[in-house]
Structures are given as structure tokens and as C-alpha cells.
Length: 382
Image 1 (cartoon, rainbow, N blue to C red):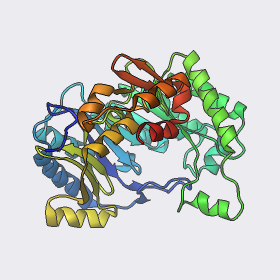
Image 2 (cartoon, rainbow, N blue to C red; image 1 turned 60 degrees about the vertical axis):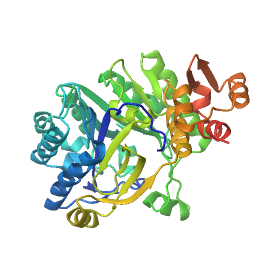
Image 3 (cartoon, rainbow, N blue to C red; image 1 turned 135 degrees about the vertical axis):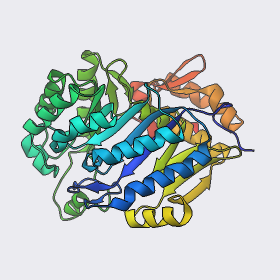
Image 4 (cartoon, rainbow, N blue to C red; image 1 turned 180 degrees about the horizontal axis):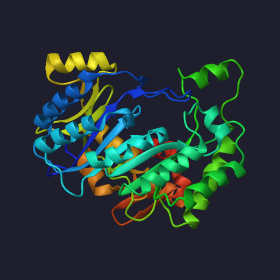
């Protein structure tokens, strides 16, 4: 029997991928498609969830996350259907976080989402600068973004806002202005993302033609430092490499990933991790919506790739993900998963260099360490 992450069944997070977007952003390399009516997909997701209940057994569901794509394009009645299915299969508690990613232009539907059971809204604002929003291919303007945040904060327990930095032509003043607006609007959670040019995106093709889309790495690093300093002064906890939260507003769902717990992954292209009675499985669903729905009808699930994770792979994943968060990792838990211990010499060297710190059983990356996290994990996992 392979090592499990916990002796008792861990809490369970559920991820639901809705792959459709009204328009596809030029920097996006997610599994997304142009929006269309797809009546089969909701039924397929419900059937897939039933299959996953058999894999997981009875669990406490701590979070449900509708991601995408743009799940705010979903009908609220379909969101309700899926939540009712989860409740029937596992049960939902009053503390279960139920989050949905939303486009600011869909603000007129926020009331319906709240009635359907959504408790946390994640808004893809990216910027309040109209020129930047046009450059980034967004279909809202700054004023719409402000209205969406104001509307959301009056309806949902928590509101998170995505902010992109490092777009070509951005200045420190531009970034400060976006942060000023976020702070004035009382946002409780901010996710910040450096603009990176991913293969097979419109921005990648443009850069190959000589059109710059992102600032230099040094400029982006400076912007990241600016964000850290500003939000720390305002009382935000930098609890993960890209995420800042007011007290009690961390993303419970994302923490399941970073802490190495189990999560269901349904919908086209969704990833999952689950501990069965004998193995820990990593799964990937069929990417294309039609293929996914056909697979569910044929097999009662949408899983295309299913891998049994070795104890070594589990342990590596725990370190790589766990050092992203301020809480770090439990060295005892790492040893229980892997059957060995982390290299003391490398840990001591990284502590001396100011990249790691240790507090009893917890091993954590410092702020400087999280800036070079790939290098640190490479050294620890030699």
C-alpha cells in the first residue's frame, strides 16, 4: 500500500471547470473555448461527480470552486443543480466555501448567484486602467469593474479580485493607482499575477512578430516588491506567493491544493487528486467539452488520464506546493509520505542564506525565498 497524506480521510475540495468564455484573452493558455449553449455539460458534470463519490467515500466538503473559463456565464439554475448534487452525494455544511470566478460584465447576475448558494466571488478585474484593459483583451472597463466590486461586496461573504501586473507600458504609478482603487473599495482578498507570455497564445504570436507585450523580468520583480510593500502596510497577509488576504478571507479551496489535500476535478480538462483505500491518484479529464461529455456517457466518468502517485511523487508535490504558502510544510508529514527525511545540510544552507526558516516541525520559505522558490525546491528535492 502506498503512503497516504493522512491516516484519516482528509477534507475534500471540489473543482468544477466551466470551459466557455465570451472572448478568449490574448494571454490565456487555460483550457477555454468560445461560449456556446451546451446542455449536455451540466448533466455530464453531475454524473462525473457521482463517480467521484465512489472514489472518495464519505468526506467533509470544505470547498467547491467553479473555475474556467468564465463560469459566471453559467445559468444560476445550473449552478443550483450542481450544488444540490454535491449536497446529495457528500453533504454541505454552513461553513463550506462555495466560490465562483466571475467576469465584471456579468454583475447583473450576482444576485442570482448568491441565491444559488455562492458565498465567495472571484472577480477577473486585472486593472482599472481602460487602456490596459483594452491591451489585455478584456471586455469591461474600469468603471464596470468598480461597480462589480461594489455590488459583490454587498452580496457575498468574501470577494477576491485578480490583478495583472507587468503589461508592456505599465509604470509604477499605474500599479499604485490600481492598488489605491482596490483598497478604497474594501476588497478582502487580492490575487496578483505577473503577465507571462505563454506558448500558443495570441500574445506569444505577437511577440514572435516583434510586438512587445510584457515588461522586463527586472521591472516585473520591482512591481512585485511594490505590491508586497503596499499590501503589507494595509494589513494584508501575504499568505501565498501570489495571494494576499485580510484576516479570515484566505481562499479555503486553493489552500487544499497548496496543503496537499484531496480534491475532485470534474469538467473538461479538470485535474484531481484523491486518496483511495490503496493508492493516491492523479487524474486529468478529457479536455474538449464534447469528448468529455461523450466519455461520461460511455464510462460514467470523464477521466482521460489516471496515474498512481508514488510516495516520492506525493512528497515532491507536497514540498513544491506547500512552500508557496506562509504556513509552509510539516517535516513530519513529509517524512510520513516519503519514508525518508529532507536533507538537513541543504535546509541549513538555505536557512543561513535567508531563504528558509524553521519553527519546530514547520519549514517555511521567507519572502526572499518565495521569490526564488523553484531554485529552493530543486535543491531540497535532489
